[in-house]
Image 1 (cartoon, rainbow, N blue to C red):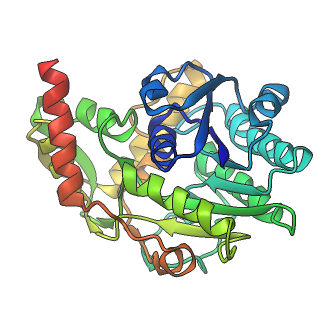
Image 2: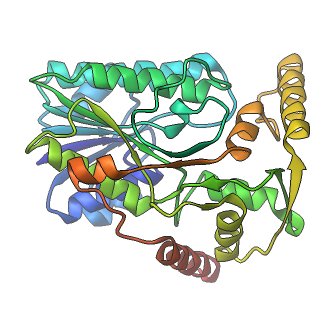
Length: 331
């Protein structure tokens, strides 16, 4: 099968591309920068942006499926840019599928779209998408997912996956942020400690591959969205300490009252907007909301409908992370 992976050169996309190529499929990684690191896996690289329809259409010619991982992530930024990439870009992917008669679309969504500011414990997909958001990222991802699910039809089978806090070797998002904030051996987090889910990158990739092949067969996941995690919820402080330890960083975590953290987020956002700063504030209301609440999920629907079970435990993933960190520092 010829498969296009948008954002294929990225963290999650690269893992998906490698898994598909290892299964013998013809894989095209579509992203703005060259994906030279995938050449050894036999993956074809095509450059372009999901916001450029003609580039996307050209890359998708002859494909039987698209896995759409490309997107703009973050806790801060211009709402219009999030909408352009995450909403308009997804609409372009759907349009390409329709124009080229590509019958399968797997979309990478986010659990943040159901977060309303309170604790989430063991929730399944019956939890509704939020109707208000504290940041442009979850709002744009919610609109994108709605569009993908609405596009499901007899001629186009679509599904959306919501992987939660993806981490692993090569992570350019969570781990660098943690390492930067843990400089000096201390880390302040809004307390008290809450239970959260995470997912190792290869498990997140496997979920996309599983969903793709289900859509080629019984289509039980067509027109639906799913939470996918490692199914090992842990106290936030514990998983953060273990991730940092795998990178050789020992840290003491100090709890900050949630009210103080929220006020700091509000003040930082106000200052950044007033001064027109382009950088990311050290703390935002959205980041505090995510850090100060429990969020772990029931993934039984993903197991039932397309057979997803995490193949790599947190312990094994941490060992792989440690090995990659040691290897990088030796090199």
